[in-house]
Length: 550
Image 1 (tube, rainbow, N blue to C red):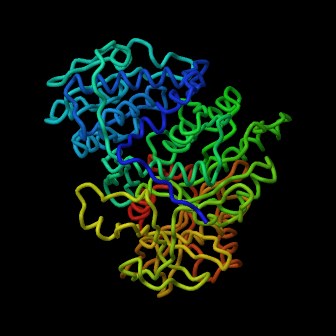
Image 2 (image 1 turned 45 degrees about the vertical axis):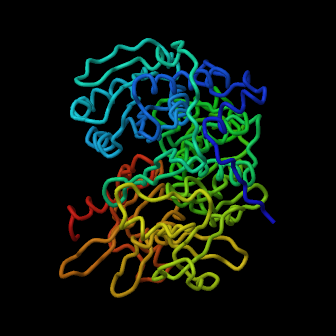
């Protein structure tokens, strides 16, 4: 029987994830690697103290928001740990997002401080000038993995706001002052939803939320170790990677290895060759690209990819099709712990795990959480569950549940029910307790009077040897009649033509109920993705609407 972890009333995540490692005598262990540079826990701790002191000196107070928009650089660590240490509230953004999206984040968070690289500050110059909340802007260099992430940086001239070098501020010697005292239920971090239906909203989380999931998932379920070295394809601003590639390794005294370049098979392999990680945070799309890259190398007579250093991979963010998992394990013999989490719960609450992998499923509920599959019309967690293998909406209970969405009470009431979260994800649970993803409740399509699950059709298409990635959407074919269109990205070595489109339709007809086959197949070079790396269905639907009926 599992024991739910508890935390002292006075509690701070910067202590839990970072400063406690120094107090335990592990200060000289390597916390971060970036290129050929190494940063010890002691060095990260000192820089975090410096940033917390700087925020206070420049008038950023407890509970005010600090917006961090950085690539995957070492300063990311001391910026967020210093923010938490100072009792401020962390919000994170994607440095590669369009300027209008970054401006939305700055306005929405009402940030009192901004930490960013020069290109982001330039893109935000107008929004910075118009902000009535911003008190300080910190600049870090936009370094590549073979450059110095702490190098001197030119400071832009900004109207109405003080500008500082992050490196100079974290290394400044300030008089000691009484540290800010935070409670376990003080607000710590805003995690943003993926924004699939409009602007992303912030799920408001407390300090205990992140520690709870770390204890039950990272330590209890996955068994992260002190000798682990982690590398991630998703970027650190995304809560999935904030956990697996910073919080989780820090919690056990392991090493987070970072690279700031755009993740591609080539840049990822350079990172793996350099760092020899034991844990890789992956996503299904990159799993497919790595396999294709490996096949391409071997076709040229090369040895292919060397992933022998890995103990396991995480996978989340989107469905991992069983055929893709089978290709991966057959080629590399490396376990993939596929699971599901959300911004609303911080991290993963249902997962495959060491010694317990059921291909195609998302595994069992993580100890410390409770999960139910309820009818779509259920208005509360007390409703009767659906039967085994029946599809319903997943509800999750656990101590990492967010308080609410900022500025969205209506959506909060629909999602948060005390200790419970209505995820909006469709699942079925088999008789052995394994959960199987069936799509999103708001993405089901009614075609000719019958329901079609896009995820079911997509998984079927992915069993075809030509398909690398795909997405099924509905479109109005006139007169209010809904039809379906599959957007397909082909694997290397296959070319788009009408005969292949027909073959893919027949492939689905032969394996699913015939009404589920895509009425049209459109080949694309790539599928649009949001800043979390997930297929951007909103963008695909817009593309489909502009295309109209065939």
